[in-house]
Amino acid sequence: MKVRGTNPNFMNGVPELLILQLLQQEEMYGYEIVQAIRERTDAAIAIGEGVVYPVLHGLEQDGALRSRRKTVNGRSRIYYSVTAAGSRRLAHLSQTWKNLTTAIQTVLTGGQRGKAIS
Amino acid sequence: MKVRGTNPNFMNGVPELLILQLLQQEEMYGYEIVQAIRERTDAAIAIGEGVVYPVLHGLEQDGALRSRRKTVNGRSRIYYSVTAAGSRRLAHLSQTWKNLTTAIQTVLTGGQRGKAIS
DNA sequence: TTGAAATACATTGAACCGCAAGGTATATTG
DNA sequence: CAATATACCTTGCGGTTCAATGTATTTCAA
Image 1 (cartoon, each protein chain N blue to C red):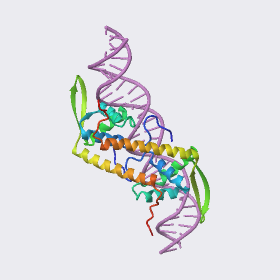
Image 2: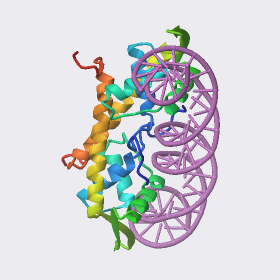
Image 3: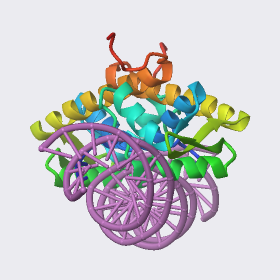
Image 4: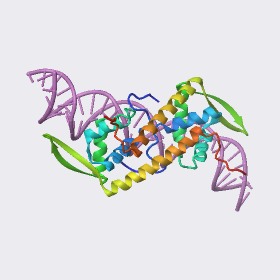
């Protein structure tokens, strides 16, 4: 029941969802992902490198991502892109997220008990 | 990276949020909360007793809930209600949830990079 | 030219939390 | 009288985020 520092307490699975989404739009490398998430969410979400890299490795091992080395400006980067399996995984995750938020919204706004008109 | 059985992977903090919300509408006891969440979300979310009871105890220890015993039909129940502190906590959590989902939605639907017009 | 900051990768330990499984006890119902 | 529903509870496992730390290179300002 401790209050966290950076991000709020609702972050379970969110890094994976966001990373897959970003990578499906365009090829990216780890460090870039960290900043992209910060920027596009106006710092509402800040996912550190200690989260991003393990997720990338895990997704690659699961066959959801593939990687290739590339040296740009003398900098060695590892670019990741989404595989077909990764695309399916994202679609599934995205749908799950939508259902979840819809269900929660129902409770939050909901006076109505689930009971039908009898 | 393992796929879960019952609920999806986005459940961090959600039980606390839902429980506070339900209890602010009306006094309830643990077992009732378990079923209420199942019913009102059409089983999209199923939070077990092993989750609900520890959360109730934690929230009470934090002063967000108060409880009173009550025997109904020979059944001993522990009814929980939200304190003023709990109400503030719910307001804060609810706002955080809203911000979070908005930020995620931006990334999910978002082609636009956060860069302003220069 | 020297040092700080940014870039880019990575690992580690701790903390937390949801979940399944199991445990106790009473009341209801077939 | 046995099975089911009600009502409470705890424990251990596993997974995940997070802060902190580490290495190495490049860029930029003093």
